[in-house]
Amino acid sequence: MSEPTLPTGVERREFDGKTRLATRGPPVYGEPTADGWRAWDPERSKLSGMIELGFDTGLSGGETVLYLGAASGTTVSHVADFVGPTYAVEFAPRPARDLVGAAEPRERLFPLLKDARKPRTYAHVVEADVDAIVQDVATRGQADVAARNRQFLADDGRLILAIKARSEDVTATPADVFEGALDRLRETYEILETQRLDRYHEDHLGVVATPR
Image 1: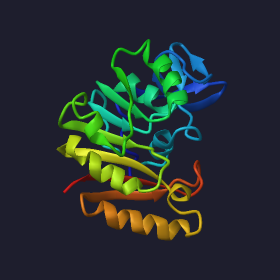
Image 2: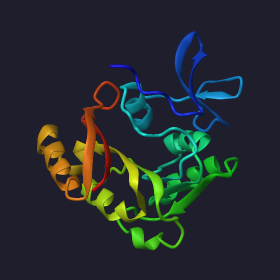
Image 3: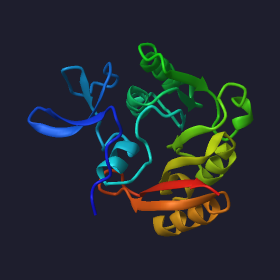
Image 4: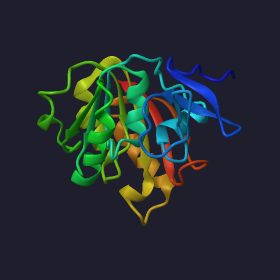
């Protein structure tokens, strides 16, 4: 099977003799840079790991994106380098301050200090029919968060989700956690692809889905 095409604006570039995924933009977290490109580390970014593992994310470049769980901006800054308007939701004030810093030189990145479990609190800001929701929320009820934010996603849009087993239940096996989360997701989404991310992120499951 051929490897999915990288989105426009994401390339494989050489840094210190190693070929790595990269986007073009100002550095955010001390990542290697070369000729205006910044290395996108799959061990620090679930989405980068998913792309390296061959997921067909549906991202081609230029999309409108809602990013849930933006933290300090490590991944969402890369996303904003190659897509269009990017709404970045983060609940914790400390990483949100770093997120604002990552957004300052990026006119398409809009930080929102909001709780992804309460989409009504930012529904007046996020435009309808976004092309993709990227979710990396380390909380219990990750599938519920995806279901609640379905309202923003275009009918042919993509949910790109990283499920962290230990955020759901530290006593259950990751396989059982993932099965339960997928069952909940199927109430709202059609699952297109799943794969464990253990090569880069232990006890995580990558999911690509589209609304039912």
